Amino acid sequence: MATIAQQVQANHSFWEAQQEYDFTIYPNPAVNMVNIKYQATANYHIVISNILGTVVHKSPTISQFTENHIIRLLDLNVQSGIYLIKIYEGSTLKATKKLIVKRA
Image (tube, rainbow, N blue to C red; front, side, top):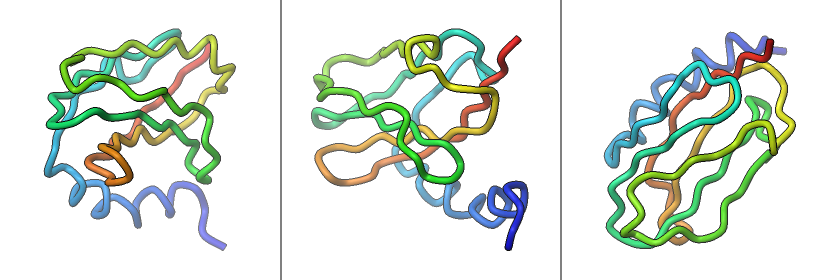
């Protein structure tokens, strides 16, 4: 069975291929909150999952005219680790990025 580090490395090319529609996340690593900046062509939603695929957050639909979105990690009760932030327009995955969460 592959380790988490091996899974991350194996999926690296997949993440890079998803960057047709780019977005910015900061700070990364994050502690309490993460800012997401995305220029959408349609309404969208954000999904955050851990590296094993368990969804820890799914936003309600966000207007395509909302360029900045803040997610409070404290509200999600997430632990330190690697997470994936995915942006969907409708049911179409537009982009994926890696987020590192560091708890004190």
